[in-house]
Image (cartoon, rainbow, N blue to C red):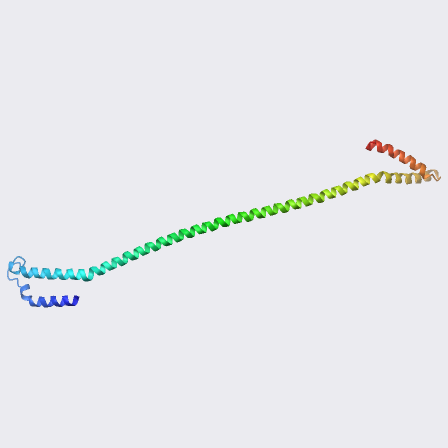
Length: 195
């Protein structure tokens, strides 16, 4: 199409070459004789410019503008989508962190409860062992307390017999000395323990 227009322009300009450039006296623009050729060339040039602009240049510019506009819109939509995705990922990340904190608190709480339970169990077990040991010691002390006067009396009798034999040189009857020792121990028992 552009080649045809160019061909016709060249052909037409060759046809009217002499009339177009025939300015014999003064300004040809003001000479009414050249007005028709001027109007013709004005119409031809501006018509050709109009056709050239309307058919070739402006559609390309329009297409480029539309392409850029659609690409800008796509880029804005993609950026908006990426922003929404990043916001969602941030929310998911915050949720994961919160869940991890809650889980860590629960694990710590369970571990603390277990440790406290173990400590209490060991404390109770230790207290039972201590109570048993105290009861055994009290029983041994009571047993010793109950048996000690008898042993003391026996030792006192044997010692007294040996001392008397050693001092006097005569054998003494054990029953007499045991009666004296028991009498003294009863008095001391009443004195220290009552009844």
